[in-house]
Length: 447
Image 1 (cartoon, rainbow, N blue to C red):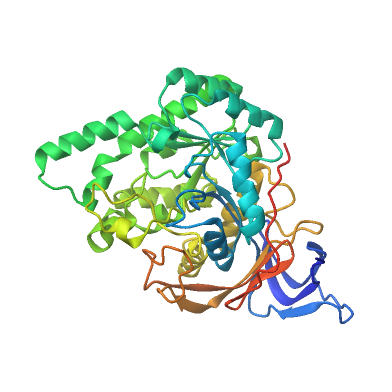
Image 2 (cartoon, rainbow, N blue to C red):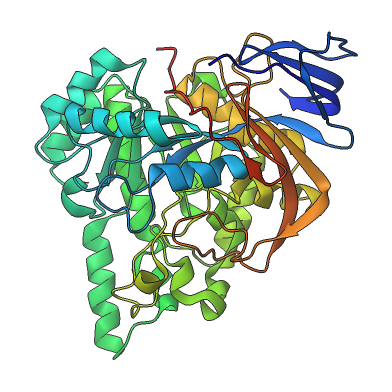
């Protein structure tokens, strides 16, 4: 089906550190022309962008959409729909589904589901275990088609835990793809848990950052970096949550030249351990949301480029799964619909510039992963675009949450508004309404 042509009029385009006022023409799914006054014959659908900012769609490099096998929590259709409503036009999804994506056959099954049901563009990581090295190394022949390899280093998620040093060494030595790591040291977590249990009869959500503390995160991240430096691997450490880990990263070289990069997630920029009293298990996640000084340090490192990208680690669970006692409540929170809007709130607060948000949620992700023809407002690129209104405000509530799980730890919080989202030139979301006549595309990579 041929794409409609669109002409977005009188908007302010934010791209590569610049603001450009004028029009943008979308033709056949791509950006045909941008800037100045563009006049077309009547075939293009006009959209009034006056008073709004046009941004490249956000690319979220870490989500959990739960399909296959855990679809009582979420599925690719429901969460991709929530993503595009929030201005996230592309996502990269993690392997801890059921069964976990530890083989290329299972991985391609996920791609097939997304091709039929995802309104956003998509890619999926190949997972690692202590015994699937052959499958991980097969990905070297598919570098242009797979976003990366995922290693859970010492933090147990089913059989995705890799705690065999020999296996870790072989993955870092052999993989030619970008390697992403979840860095927490399981042995230290277990010791902290047992020590706290000897002190207390009943554990509470506020104990989470004591059990999963700064030291165990640092030790695991340090170990991953040692492996990467030994083998010259391309390493991307996910969801940095501590001030201590920041000494491991640099802003002294351009992003394109970095072999070791780091991600920060929106919940670690927004919440602190003070919020457990109000939200309890709703904000239980791994790595834990920690003491306020960490949040302050993460913001500083994001603004000075020691932290390279912003993501969500969107990890929905049912409300019932969150109501269990602390030890049994599932870890993770749903965020992908609200990540860009939350960062726009911080733009209005003066904490971060709009240009920096675009850099960290679009440009830097595209550069980090070498995403092909996305992440920028450039003529010839896929038209993954988002119109936002910083002067409008919407309050997050049960009535407008699109996650299958139906809840958010941000309920009652007000943010600026995402008004329109284009995926491959298709207006998939506009002013609260969806057009589901066209699905997203598989991401490709310049490797």
